[in-house]
Structures are given as C-alpha cells and as structure tokens.
Length: 255
Ligand SMILES: Nc1ncnc2c1ncn2[C@@H]1O[C@H](COP(=O)(O)OP(=O)(O)O)[C@@H](O)[C@H]1O
Ligand SMILES: [Mg+2]
Image (cartoon, rainbow, N blue to C red; front, side, top):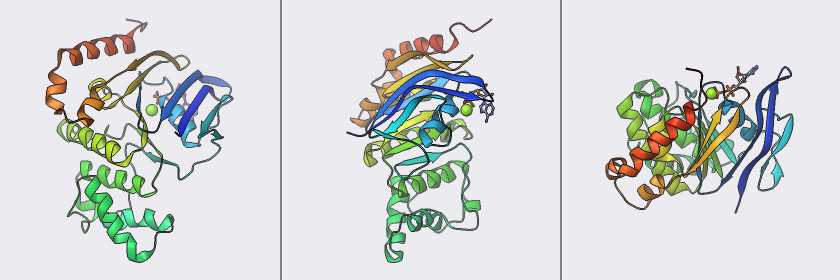
C-alpha cells in the first residue's frame, strides 16, 4: 500500500527552526489530523507533504519516492481556496479534468459525478458567486478529487465556515474519504472536529514545532461503518477523548 511519509523532518525559515524532527506516516485509508497551537508548524508540515517547502533535514516520500514538487498524486485544499468565479461549479471541476487530459465529451459527466460525491448534485450550473461558503468548499473538494489523487492535503478546509455548515461538512468529508479511498492529512483548530474525522491525531507543540502526543482514534471508522454521528458524539468515550486531547494540546503552555 502507498504511504505518504515524513521522516524526522525539520523545517527552517531564514535559519530559524520552525519544525524539528517530526515523523508522520499516512497510509491510504488513514485520516491523519494535525492539531496544536498556532505556530507549531502544522502548515509547514503540510507544505512539505505538498512539495512546496523543502525540509532542511529528514525526508518526505510518497510510495518510497522523494517528494520534490507538487504532483497529481496529492491534492491540496486550503481554507479559502480560489475557484474561478466566472465559471459554473461544473466548469470549475471540469477545468481540473481538462488539466488531467480527460476528453471533452467525458468532462461534464465526470464533473457531475464528483459534484454528487460532495453532495452538490443539481448545483452544476450555478456560478461560484451564487454559492454559499460551504458549497464553495464542496466545489473545491470536488475539484481536488478530479485529479484522482492518492492523498488529500487539507489545511483548515472548514475554518471559514459557520458552526452548523462546518458540522455538516465534517460528515461530507468522511463520506468522501470512504468513497474515494484516499489517504487524508488534514490540519484543524477544532478539537471535536479532529475526533470526529481522524483515525490518528498528531498533537504538535510550538517552539520549535514537534510532536508531543499521538492518539489512535476509532470514531470516524465507526461512522464509516454506519453508526450515526450523533450516537458517536454522545458516547462517554468521546467526551473522555475530548478532555484528553484538550489537555495534550495545552500541556506545558505558560498560564
Ligand atoms: N514563509 C515563512 N517565513 C518565515 N517564517 C515562517 C514562514 N512560514 C511559517 N513561518 C514560521 O514558522 C512557524 C510555524 O508556522 P506554521 O507552519 O504556519 O504553523 P501553524 O500552521 O501551526 O500555525 C511559525 O513561527 C511561523 O511564524
Ligand atoms: Mg497554519
């Protein structure tokens, strides 16, 4: 199975350490979530995985091959991702299909399939400016999946959404993860979000960024197996994990 591996990665900016010896292993079917206070290197690590930032030490590989640049095996979605506002939702997704060399007569059908996957069926003709924030983020995900990546790299993709939309998008993300067989590496600020989505949570601390805890969690696999998200969140084990994760994030922080 293909793994995306960061092995003892250190990142410096202008000679100053931002990340020190962080190791992360994402298999296909994993949903790995990075959490930690601002400045602990979450975005830097995602950028290393994307091939946008080069580590000063350590290695980043995908399927054993070094990551040296962005590639179609990895799709990146940021918080405020730019869609083409003058194109429709379908055309935004079809554009990515065109870049991949999909034949013109197949693009619209494939784009509609992808829009259905992110629960935007019927919205293909809408222009981007007609869509809500949550719907735009769904188009962004559909576009990312158009490249048929093996891994999705998500930097606070739901951060700009209101609380209710955000909660709905969490289950959309899980459905999409289950249906598309991608491995996910995602950054979030949300403690509950991390617990809902992850199969593994990596807690980072700043100064410089390093791993302080790793949790293997089972809540998202329970959802994937058919358990309703409400039942999962109401499980006392969920509340216990939330307390434990919160402690891990704020451990060692100056009061
Ligand atoms: N392009 C950059 N140039 C200089 N310093 C940077 C750059 N990007 C990030 N940093 C610094 O590296 C550290 C980690 O940043 P970042 O990876 O963005 O953390 P996070 O995403 O967890 O908030 C911070 O101290 C930040 O100021
Ligand atoms: Mg960040």
